[in-house]
Image (cartoon, rainbow, N blue to C red; front, side):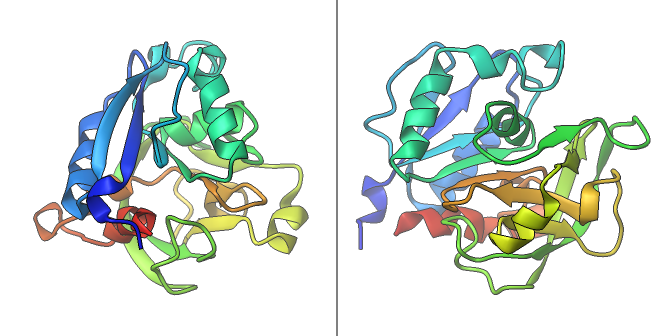
Amino acid sequence: MTDVTDVNVGIIRFPGTNCDRDIEYAVNIVGAKPHYIDWNKKDLSNMDVVIIPGGFSYGDYLRAGSIAGITPIITAIKEFAKENKPVLGICNGAQILGEIDLVPGVFIENENARFICKNEKLKINTTRTPFTKLYKKDELVNLPIAHKEGRYYTDNLEELYDNDQIVLTFEDENPNGSLDNITGVCNNEGNVVAVMPHPERAVEKLLRSEDGLKFFKGILD
C-alpha cells in the first residue's frame, strides 16, 4: 500500500471556483497532499488523483462548465484520465466532466429553475470506483447539495445500468428532476466520477455528517 503522505491530489482551480479550500481540508483530513493547480497549467504528471471542485467557473456564462471545458488544463485532465488515474468532479466539476465528455450525460438547469441548497439522503449505487469503494452497495448517506444546474440527463440510460455507471441516486425525493433520480455517474472504466452532492462538506461531525469522508479515504490505496 502507498504511504498516505505520498498521495498527491491535484485540486483544479478556475476563475469562479469556490470549493477548493473545502477539498483541501478534506484531503488534509485523510492525510494526503493537496496541490492547487490553476486552469492555465498543462501538466498533471506529478499527481496521483485529480479533483475538480464546485463553484461557478467563469460565472457559468453560456452554460455551466462550458468555458472551463476549453481551457489548457482540460487536455491534461483527459490524458490523466486515459491513464486510468482517479478523477473526481464535484458539482461544477461534475458539470465540467460532462461538458468534456469524460462521463456520460449532462447536468442541466433544475426542473424548478431555482438554486437548491439542502441536505439529501442518497444511495451508493456502485462501489467499483476509487471514490466509493469503501462504501457498501446500496448504502445510504447524507450529503449536502448546492446547485441550480444539477438535473442529470442522458440519452443512454439503459447503457448506464448495463455498465454499472450510476454512482449516486436521490433516495427520498428528487429535488431537481434528475432522470431516474441520478445525481452521480462514472465513465465506463470507473476511474472518472462526477457527482453533484458535496462529500467534502460532510467529513466531520461538526458539519453534521461524516458520510462523505470515504470518498477521500478511498483514494489512498
